[in-house]
Length: 128
Image 1 (tube, rainbow, N blue to C red):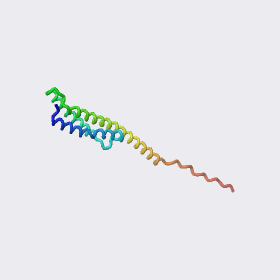
Image 2: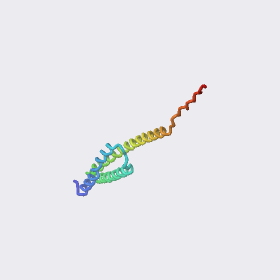
Image 3: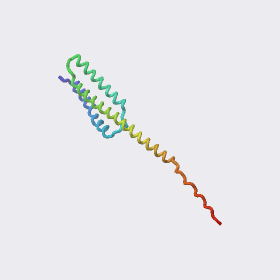
Image 4: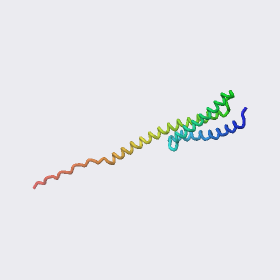
């Protein structure tokens, strides 16, 4: 039977989990990792793993899987998806930066290139 504490925990997990789908869509569409923190996402995943381990300990004591366990797993899967998208977007950012550097280098080379001057015309000898 589900108790009030589990209902409150499920509510907390729903509140945490509500934002991740929006974050995933934003990461998918933006194709940039600007403003994203891998460390933050890894810490969040670690927190969910600790919570899941706590549910495992409860399972070993009672033989029943607590209901909030499924919400921990769902939230963690969403964070992992966002983490993978962040890694993908970092690769996109790296490629974009490489293209920009290449264009800047080419532009600098073009600006520094001095066009070859045409030889000065040789004055013709005038016959008297």
